[in-house]
Image (tube, rainbow, N blue to C red):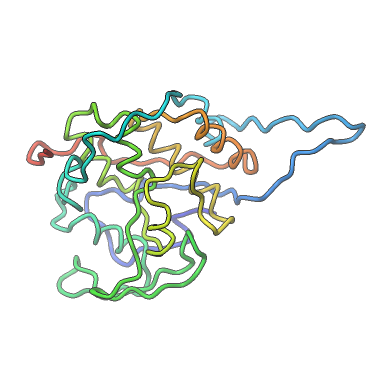
Length: 249
């Protein structure tokens, strides 16, 4: 499923360059690896160059660090306008991911819209400002990032991660909150048809920012992506450091 084709944007999202966010076209299928002809075991999928499966092998594997010191404020104020388009990141992502968008004022604050084919549940969900059942999820949660490298970063890099469109997705609030700070080894969307795209997104974010994975996480990523070895690695154009005017504690 190609992300950009699945859900069009209503309006243009300023300088965020959200058009650079490309998620792979390959679907995700449940495949049982079993003996083939003559009783020989099937060879594990290798993945082509540029595939998410291939990219998993480039991720550093380490144990999870303690959560000590983590706070949301370590990643800056929520939904900062890091791309300087005069619209906060939350509204940028709603504009990108919803259809039938109506604005509260101007072309920034979203008043209502529809999330068609929610990635995590597969449902169509109505968005109404002030009574929303839609969250903006960090594919790689900020807590998970903190425990896998981000605690040592310069604040500007943490702010960039928290607001990078590559790491953000409008989704149903219920599944998102059940996810918590889970990684691929501990949580996957119930919508099996989206799992390959979801995991590929996590791989892309961790590769872009140099975050590591645990051995269990890497194994889980490879297990999912082996069912779709040609799933492309998403690309994002946002810089990995926020402008100097932004500061995190």
